[in-house]
Image (cartoon, rainbow, N blue to C red):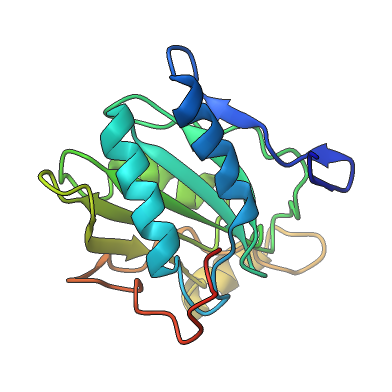
Length: 195
């Protein structure tokens, strides 16, 4: 049975799916059945499944996760980049975030790229995180993440003048990129989490 949310199939893979083996395709689609705690970027079991699949396929994999912790999109890229699908009007607006966070794998241990930070800014994502794939084991390694900051008072005053509604858009100022040995990937309090 295929799960649906608002008439959208929840087992669709986006991106570069050509050449995937059948068992990898099935495992990637199975990621839609997992959840993560809303207070974490990604749970340990989900991060492990994600990085192991990334290593087996030799591709970057991305998850768009909503604020409730449900997987909204599974995106498959090549070894270097992921091209995100059109998000349409998913909570779109000049003065609000989309309510989605992007979690990516990183096979080359490069960290957040300019493309990742551009997606964060232009798509108005809540946050973007990259999980390094340990080369020998395929397990999750270091995590880097970034988020946007609201505009400063000076920026707000400057942008409010030209807006007929008097509302400034979200500031495109990037918060510093955060690093951590495990970052937001912490052991789950509930052992059933991430299933």
